[in-house]
Length: 242
Image (tube, rainbow, N blue to C red; front, side, top):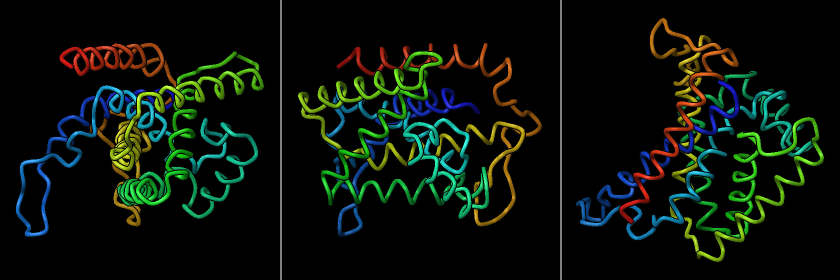
C-alpha cells in the first residue's frame, strides 16, 4: 500500500480502537481485574486527536526498510541512511519490520521511553506527527524545500497546541504499536503479503486470493476516498458526545 493509505488506516485504527482499549480493566498485583481502564482518565478529546496523528505517523514506520519509501525521504540523508541500514538488517523490504515482533517491540519500547525520558517522548511525538503530515501530502507539489518548511511549521504548530492543551502521553506506546500493526494488516491485503510471524519466512495474504495492487486505480480512486470519509465519520462519532 502507498504511504497515504497507511497513514489514513493508522488514524482510523486509533479512532476506532483507542476508546475501547482504554476501557479494558487493569490487572493488579494480585492478578485480579479492577474497575479501572488501562488508560483511565488519560484519553480525552485532545489525546484522541493527538493519538490519531501519532498513529498515522507510526503506520509508516514498517516501511523504514524501503529506501525509496516516503519515510526514508522525509528527513533527507539521515532517514535515507537509516533506511538502508534497516533494510540490510531486516533482509530487505517486507521483512522483519512487517511483523508482529516489530510492532510489539516498538510499542513497548516507545512506552518505556515515554515514561523514562520526557525529551525522548517529545521527539518521538514531533517526528511521528511530521511523518503523518508528509504521508497525507501536506506541502507544495514539486517543491521539496517548500514542502519541508510547511511540514516543519505545521508540526511545530500542532505540538504547541498539544502543549497548550496539556496533552498526556500515557497512550503513546499503544498508538505506535497499533500504527505498526495496522500497516502490517494493510500490506497483508496486497499481493505480496507480509511475514507476520517473522522470523518464520511464510508470508500471509488477506483476504485470501484477493490482492490489492499498490498504487493502482482501486487504491487511489476508490480506497482513498472511502478512508477519508471513514476518518471524518469516526471523528464526529468519537467527539460529538464529549
